[in-house]
Image 1 (cartoon, one colour):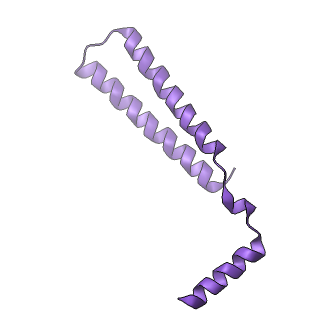
Image 2 (cartoon, rainbow, N blue to C red; image 1 turned 60 degrees about the vertical axis):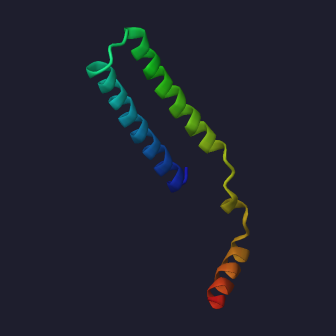
Amino acid sequence: MKKKDFVFILGLTLFMGILWIVGELVMGLWIAVVPWQRMAWRIGIVVVTLGISVWHAMLEDESDKKDPKRAKYERKTQNRRK
C-alpha cells in the first residue's frame, strides 16, 4: 500500500466517523427518530465508506506505468525551460 492510499483511507475513516457522530448527536438531541432509523444511519455510513474506499482502490495510478528514466528526463528538461 502506498503512502497516499493510506492517508486517503485514514482521512476517509476519520471524516466518516465524525459524520456518524454528528448524525447520532443530531438524532439524539434535536430530531426524534425510531431505533431502526439509527440502525439505517449506521449501515448507510459503513456502506458509503466502503464504497468510496473500493472506488478509490480501483482507480488506476498512472505513476507506476511511467518509465523512471523517461520521467527523470522530463523533470530535468522541465526545470531548464523555467
